[in-house]
Length: 208
Image (cartoon, rainbow, N blue to C red; front, side):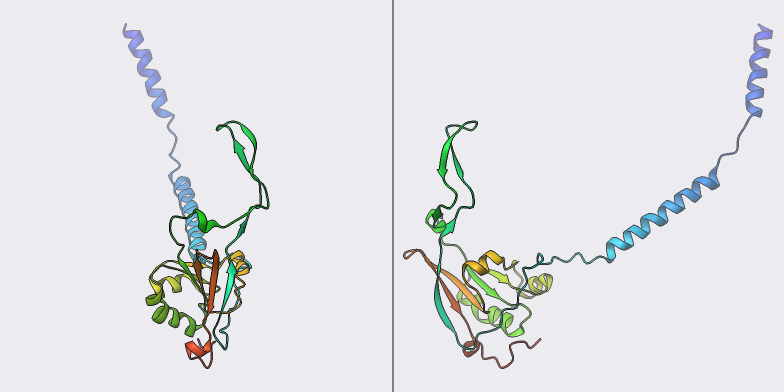
């Protein structure tokens, strides 16, 4: 028994002698290097301009017209693909509405859509007229800017703002700011009112 205890003691002593230094300097240097990489990556991310921007090709200038005018626009929409007819959730038995089918979306809405107020936010006179005059006339509205700083527009109007979609601009033949798109459900058409310099009272529509 004594010999077994002696053997265990000798093994324990020999293992205790085979100690290896902990590589603390190497570990610390690795941490520091990784920390530097993370900080550099964070600086690059923070330096990026993360402000919302219009998709490429969306921003266009909309100058004020010299005279105000009103014209009619179509409310018809056209399907760009077939809508299948289904007997149930797993089986298609034909086509309900074919590609190219035209319809009036407003016929299926329980209430009118908001008035669209389209303008060039970079034009100081346009944005001021919209805020000071049109806000009172059209409480149920949607603001569509053809170009300009999105965040600045949010702060200026204190309500949601959207970039003007090219399809909307094309649909209602919008070429001037300020253009107000209203809906005539009885006649099934849109009424586009262009507010020009004769109402805005502008001499230089590009004044910053």
